[in-house]
Amino acid sequence: MRLIIRAYAVFLLVCVIMILATGCQDTDKQLSAPEGPKSDDGIKIGLSMGTLNEERWQRDRDIFVARAQELGAEVIVLNAYNDSEEQIRQTGYLIDQGIDVLIVIPNDADKGIEMVNMARKAGIKVICYDRIIKNANVDLYVSFDNIKVGELMAEALVKEVPTGNYVILKGSPTDYNSTMLYEGHMNILKNYIRRGDIKIVAETWAKDWAREYGFQCVEETLEKGIKIDGIIAANDSLAAAAIEALSEKRLAGKVAVVGHDADLSACQRVVEGTQLMTVYKPIEKLAKAAAEAAIKMANGQEIYIYDTINDGKYDVPYFMIQPIPVTIDNMQSTIIKDSFHRMEDIYINIPQYQWPKE
Image (cartoon, rainbow, N blue to C red; front, side, top):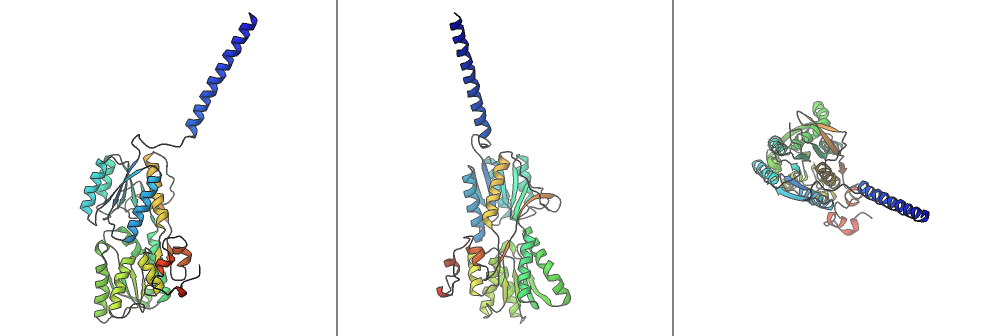
């Protein structure tokens, strides 16, 4: 009888141990499992783009979408074609689609606040990508240091042409980046202007970043018989327009022109000698960072950002990436090394024996 009782006790003990072990295994699995999506339907992100006209925006879109999809999210991309009212209407559509996070590249820094208010009313987090929305207090701003971009452009130009007549082709007046770029230019130029070393002989805004404004400004300045020694163009598209106007007077390569974005055509002009420099902004880092931040926001995870930028009224969390100046001297160690563009594409118009050694 004692043997039976002892055997039964051992059996019960084994059962208890097995139950406890099973429970511990389940707990371990729960603790180590990756954090899942916000709902059974997964995460849905709305990407509202003010434009896709420039090469760089197409690259931003493709990298962002690819990274978000890698992380299991669905992305709805809409292009407003530089129409602010259309972008507001599209925001309503994205909200109706049940997005969890709204990523905005605003066409208009002032009107964009309406999009933010719409999203907030629906309980949706908002990230401004590359372009800030003024006075909106968005949840996060992901961009490059645009004042620094402007400074790098002006520094390169004054190093090459420390005295003479300058033309400044500013960006879109509704894009706050244009203001920051111009602030960067003037941080460098103001002392040269005050001393009389540099004279600004013409400047213009380019509505919607349209290149024709740049072409017209340079063309009209030259037709007035005014000598131009240097041109600061707010992006590479405007730089291309300026160089086109210079070409008509056989001045391409004789007037120093700077731009930014590191478009393929701009890199080609740099190595060909018609554009002095461009500014490389590592878009892959920016787009991936924005996608990862959106996923975290959708999952209610904390995002630790220590920099801020004032949007005119509020200090907004600011994920900032530093830009890189690019000339013919460091094209290989920056653009080509990062596979942003291929050497054979950049040097397509240059005899191969003149290509840099890999």
